[in-house]
Length: 113
Length: 115
Image (cartoon, rainbow over all chains, first blue to last red; front, side, top):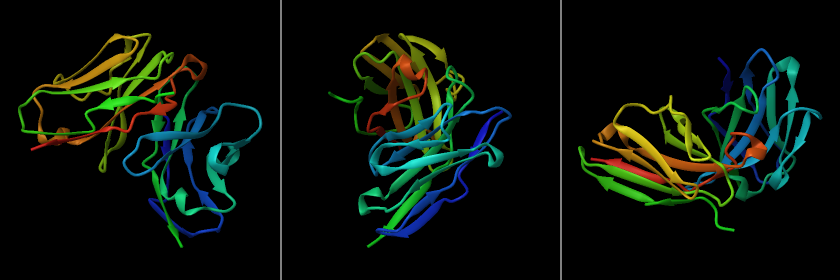
């Protein structure tokens, strides 16, 4: 069965610094990949998704993610974080367009002023 | 446009009581999902509907849990009888068939505490 791993439970970066959140998946074929963000007291919001094609995907709020098949990874990046980016970030994977997706355990991002 | 609307936002009740959580999806979305979020288990899919029909309820933990979607604009998740281990945040999400069955929009959740 497919699975998704977010190895970092917490990440702290300074405002204005670059960010990379890691996500690894386990699946034999190319899965469908997603990143969601959850602000405190709110539901999840879809940041970006990868189905096929260009391996560098642009999302909302200035985020991007790169699919690397050789590393089974789909890491989320942002060149310069803002204090408002402090939230929890979830990577998710699906087998195909017609299957439910599985969420990782999440990475909580803290921003230092 | 209104997003996914869940009610109540908070619910505190005693063990053994019936709990009903409500969800109004985004108009035009034909997929509806119920998730449960806890510190220990993370985000778990309980059940999802397509065109008001339950497609996969394999995540529903026990027979004490039931979900219905009587029409395209309303769904309920019921727990009867409730137990302290049901305490969690329950999210409803909706999506449209352009993204197949991946949820695009989540409600703000119902924080459920069973005493």
